[in-house]
Each structure stands twice: as structure tokens, then as C-alpha cells.
Image (cartoon, rainbow, N blue to C red; front, side):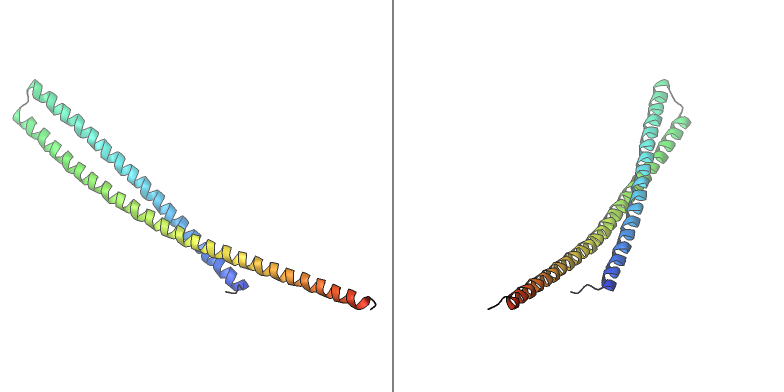
Length: 155
């Protein structure tokens, strides 16, 4: 495969585009992880609040509670349970988005690595060609010098 200046610049352009795509995927992954942490924190807060409210109900029941208050506590706990269920689902959904973002970042990184590998191979091949060309020039110089010395020496 021959390396032309335009081939190299095209590869550099593709590599830059891949680097930009990888960086964008990384930024999205960071945002998704941050959202996951926030969602997890909200879920934890709901768990704590439900535990506290449940303790209040237990305390109220020990002191004696009227049926209407008992009903209100139970309804509120049921609404907290529903909120917990929604928050757990939101966390599971967010974790899937994080996994998807991680895979997208990995794909972009693999693409960038492929371009980097290709660029390294092209550079190595160019260096080999240059070394061969330099060796050929040196061999030609030595051959011509030897030929000149042989023609200059009397026989």
C-alpha cells in the first residue's frame, strides 16, 4: 500500500474525527454516570424517608392511634412504596443507559486505536522505505567509488 501525502492527511483527518467521537462519547458517559449517581442518591433518600416514616407509624401505634390517622399513615407509606418502585425502575433504566454509553465509548476507542495502528504501520513502512533508499544510495556511492578506484589504479 503506497502512502501519499493525501492518504496520510486523510488518515489524520479520520483519526481526528474518531478522537472527537471518542471524546464526545466519553462526555456523554460521564453525564450518564453522574445522572446514575444522582438517581441512586434519590433512591437512598427515599429509602431513608420511608424507614423514618415507618418508625413514626410504629411509635404512633404504640401510643395509640385513631383509625383515620392510621389510614393516612398507610396511604402515605403506600405512596412512598410506589415512589420507591419508580425510583428503582429509574435507576435500572439509568444503569442501562450507562452500559450503552460505555459500549459506545469502547467502540469509538477501538476505532481510534485502529486508525492509530494503521498510522503507525504507515510510518514504519515509510521509515523502512527511507532506510532502503538510503542504503541503496550508500551502496551506489560505494560501488561507484570502488569502480573509480579500480579504473584509476594502473594495471
